[in-house]
Amino acid sequence: MTARAKTPLSLLVGLSTTLREPVLDAMTDATTVVVVVDQDELPGRGALSWRVQDASGPIDAGEFTIGDDCGACQLIESLVPLLEALVARANWDHIVLAAPPAMEARPLVATLLSAVPEIAVDTVTCVVDAVLLVEQLSGDELLAERGLALGLPDRRNVAELTARQIEYADVCALANAHRSATPERLVHLLEHLNPRTAVVTADLAGVPTGPVARTGRFDFDAAEAWAGELASSDRLQPSGDGVTTVLWTSTRPLHPARLNDALEDIVDGVVRSRGVVWLANRPTQRVRWESAGYSASLGMLGEWSETEHLAECTVVATGMGLDPARLQAILDACLLTESELASLDWQELEDPFAGVF
Image (spheres, rainbow, N blue to C red):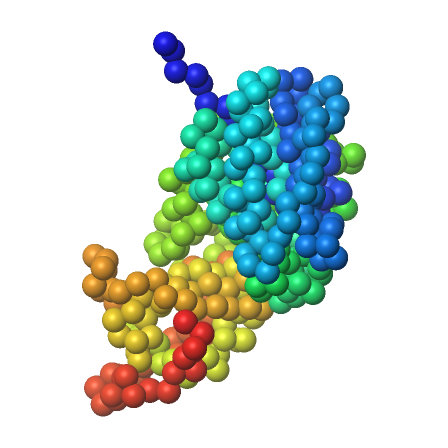
């Protein structure tokens, strides 16, 4: 018996549900079934509503109840049996899943690939609003402040979500480009944030001018590598049109208190940064560095002994109007000095990140 081919799935993400509608229409055809999940009812009723439709019209609808735990986790768990049922019906040869605005593609894709082997992720498309992109990437507003959090524990900010949606996308559909004074700069910014992505502009009606589904562009290993640790010079893109990406490295550890005091200066002018750092008072630990907009975070990645690398600091930062020399100087000033390297008891240093990670 010939094995049945996997059903390709195209995933649509993005904060603006209004701008996503024309893109969603462009992703579908007569052989496509569409699953749309929205979160309008989540703040008031604790539920995510969903609907299923194809070219003939509505097929089914319902809702997923979200408790006080991880809303994204509960959504993913609820989607699996729904998608399995659609595949089993075998009435369509393509699935489009429109995720709720605050959903990131990465955890959703990872679960679908392991839990629903009958599905093959084909394309991840992110809708980007040209008018709001810089604002969304530059602030520190929490999703909860906009009523967009996926449950009570969700403390992500808008900049973090926007960056992660872009970084995992095979296609970025740039809507409202005609309303931007510098659309070329925005394209350049998207290419710095994710050189894997194909940027497709939309026309005045919001309809994309290029393919946004069934592109065959999704590559799990490449997507995971880019969304993971950024730690090499091959991640740099040519500067131009006001967009710059900087690589900063050091073989000396960071003084934790000086780093904490400098956080605001480090992220000033930086849209997005990621990397791995070495804190002097935690000499064995690999520490994740991540910033989006005005927010920076650090977390544990593991031990240096688990890698082939000696302890070091590596950060890749992208910004608009970014001054590389200034950023380098700020980060360098956070390092232990030569005299501190020789005389300090590193582990006795004050730890401003205690309890954070």
